[in-house]
Image (cartoon, rainbow, N blue to C red; front, side, top):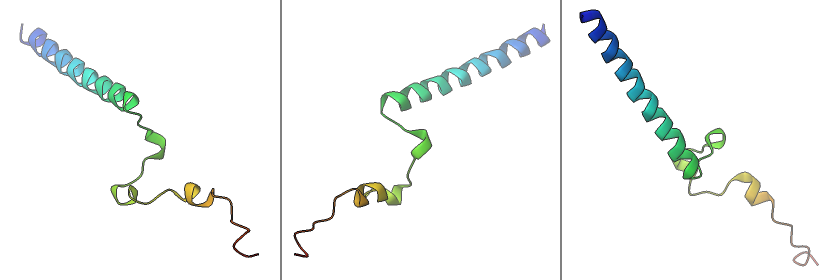
Length: 63
């Protein structure tokens, strides 16, 4: 009886952790999260390097 109760409690805990993980993944995907390109909090105010270099140079300024 104790073994069955322990196994049930263990499976209930595993199920709760699995649901929490699934909810976290779904929330991250729906909010537009990109887990492979995360930036730190310090760099959130500065534009990424790609954006700063993607502007075409202004040739009229040198002419």
